[in-house]
Image (cartoon, rainbow, N blue to C red; front, side, top):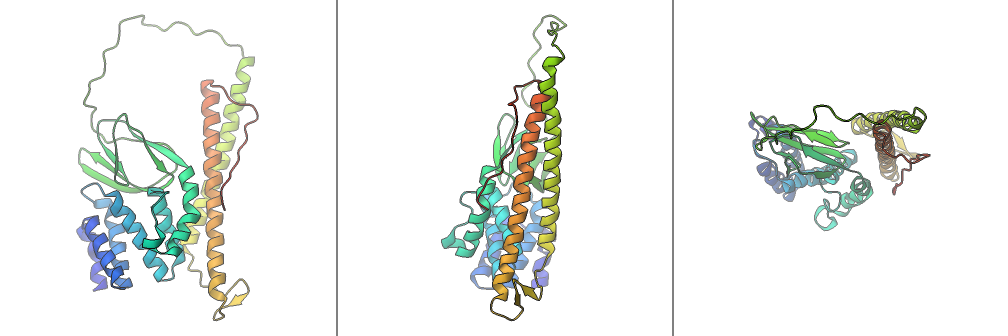
Length: 307
């Protein structure tokens, strides 16, 4: 039965139907059946033929977290909470509906995502959806940094991918803009000559973009460490014989194991926050230096948050 359910990805069943089936299995305390439906839903996200519903996505991530905690898989529960918080960093998880333990994890990770938002735009005539929210040419959709379901209305149909969005994005659908471009107004073929600028006036801008490159490189290194640490975190079963000085079988072994998982997760958050902060400030300095925009002297980087 469960093996058959795991093959549901081949049929590309609609997300809503799989969420309903997973919720019914959770209500019946059939954890293994619920896990099969949830895994099948993840596998079918790239082949959905219609834009996903934001509520269905949030329900999938919440059910993933609930089932993971029921199976004592805390690492997967954290990852499910991060996905839900990327969609809605304010109210994705509710203690009364989803349980206090999942709500506690949400309260730990969501505030940092709520403070780090990026802009998504569409560059041509089609429509895109990010976690079920539409965006078109001329519109700006703000989303939290993290993993998102990006769906694009292309000439060949709907293209769906799970992507990590960590900076402003411009999506291209391949569809032409419906409104023709405005004709160029007649005038001088050559622009007026730009005033000459002394080389000395160029020095602050040069310092700014060089500093921006350096900060960007440091931010990239921090994000690389975060990504590597996260991969190791998700692959680690946390089944050592001792945690926090407590051997397996002792009453304190489980709490020591949970503390170890939380410490690793907090470290990953720190790397991500530092990486995003450094790359953001570095990018601003680089653009300001190249374009000649005003740049504050002595740029500083501060990373704050409730760790």
